[in-house]
Length: 292
Image (tube, rainbow, N blue to C red; front, side, top):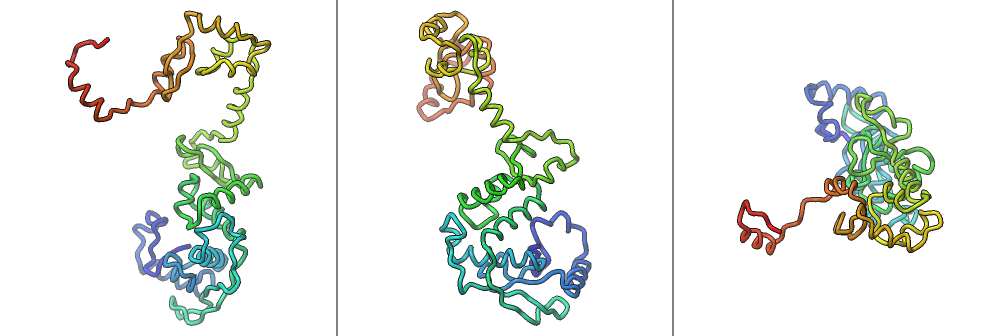
């Protein structure tokens, strides 16, 4: 779907590369004669009008296109939009590839159209992050997130780390383990959340056991619900212990940790930010001399 009048589509650029244009024209002509594809018009969206779609997806795109140019960008729920009087046209007859008849269509269920569009995108293009889906859909992020959450609770989508680990991606449940070359190790995003939750509320017999299992603690109250029979005197004992280090440990946060954890924390620290004043100061420090 989405093939423009010149038979181009950025999503299919690699697949169509090397195929003769006359061959593509022949395919389109054949599909038109078999009524398997049609054209859209009258949606008000230049990204949709005049493009080729299957009859079912033409209805979905026609509905979403009309909504997008009639207030869809300003609401958080598609059901809030008034669709009465809105319509678009679908080609119903062709002279080879030229439409000769058009039929006006009323808008379908906006909520259902959005669900189908997201499922179609994930099914044809694979895992997508929330940002990628928002960029492709002309609707607010809150609305996209609401539909994604609904599909996830219905067990249609899964959330995980499939192509990268910077941001969670959405994928069809049925495609969850059918990834490129079937070689990626799939990590469920919800599994990671549950793991963090279980670790957060795990009980320990004493403070040092808690310190061994956590990166850092910022205050004694964090130990109240983690240590059985915790006493505030225990906190004083840990502060005085030679294995416990206090400092600005991670993301500019003050906290306490153990000596064994310091190498990991140093590895997690980002590159220091250097502003104009810092640059001026660094110029005045002789190169090769230790600074204490």
